[in-house]
Amino acid sequence: MVLSEFSNSVHFIFLNIFTQVTSRKDQEQYWADWSKPYSYMSVSEFVKRFKKFNIGLHMKKELSIPFDKRQSHPAALIFSKHMVPTSELLKASFTKEWLLVKKNSSVYIFKTIQIIVLAIIASSVFFRTKMHADNEDDGTVYIGALVFSMIINMFNAYPELSLTISRLPVFYKHRDLLFYPPWVFTVPNFLLRVPISMLESIVWVVMTYYSIGFAPDAIR
Image (tube, rainbow, N blue to C red; front, side):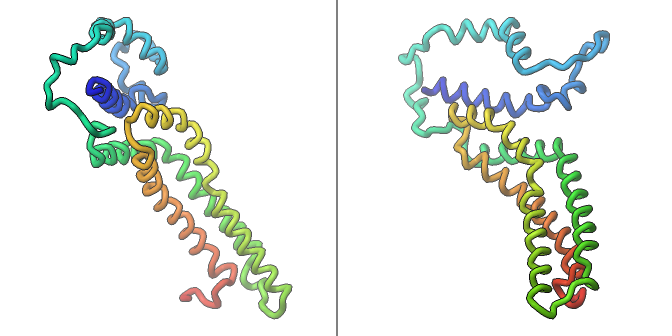
């Protein structure tokens, strides 16, 4: 059990360290032999070559020998599901999520520019000088502007959906191997995305609230 937990912990650290090495965007900077042209090496190719390397062969030979439990120290027993402390798991998960946010910064920049353009279009369609508040028909137009604003802010995060779906296999693998509990993965993901969503909403409100005429003056 101890050997299994240790192996899981080492694997977890290994994955965090070599995230950039196996990334298609960042791998080129680690290319050592510049006498040969660079070519992307996939994760499966890394695994295949590591198993053929002398360290991989030595590790496979060691793991093939059953561990003699009589040689283990009595204090080596572990009674918790995860060997790494929760604080360290959270720290590693925050670091990983922040790295992914920086790597995918183009997506968030595109979303911000997109919502600015849509706010300009919405302001021109529902311009405050053309909006009246005299009868129920006028109120229907305001409701249409509110529904449009709600739809834009609700579906503006759709570009992130593909990124989230592509990460699910890795998340399920980490969860099944007891690298960390699911909430350790979810909390950093939530906390780092909330400020981005709030920024997009603030941009939309600043650009549309007065120009559409939801408030009678800019100060309000």
